Image 1 (cartoon, rainbow, N blue to C red):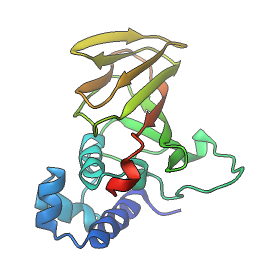
Image 2: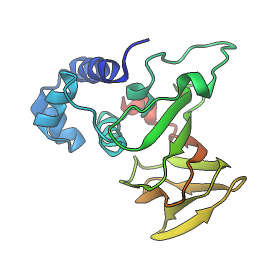
Image 3: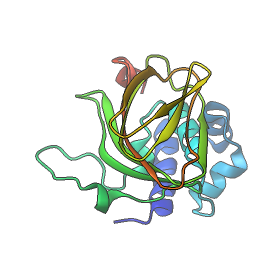
Length: 191
């Protein structure tokens, strides 16, 4: 399997070339600087998850396009979080892409681990995107509609992710949760 930075570099370049975009146009579409995009493509930078989301949103693709070197496979493939878990970005979040985006289903499913002290504010995703968060271990807080809500093991929340939202763990142990991200049906038409 490719190193996450190497995979990200290849995936970004492939997405950009498929659209015929220059680095300047990619910067305009994603809101990420041309310098940062160039560093990512050369494998010289490990961006934050927030930056990866901006890039995915600018390309109108799922986050797993940039985080899952294995890609989506059809069939009865067993995917084990322990084998998939890695730190694809510079921040303190571990990601296991359990089921990468598949247009037949319209969603992607992650196991996310927030290390102690981690906080991330997420910019709005594309119109119609919905997130489902299910805490499987530890405690965390989720920012929805401007309010931080405490979630404990076993709690589940669904919310529109096309507005500002965030995740944090101010506890002493990692918080682990499943995050199912459902995209609106016209996502494929926009690609």
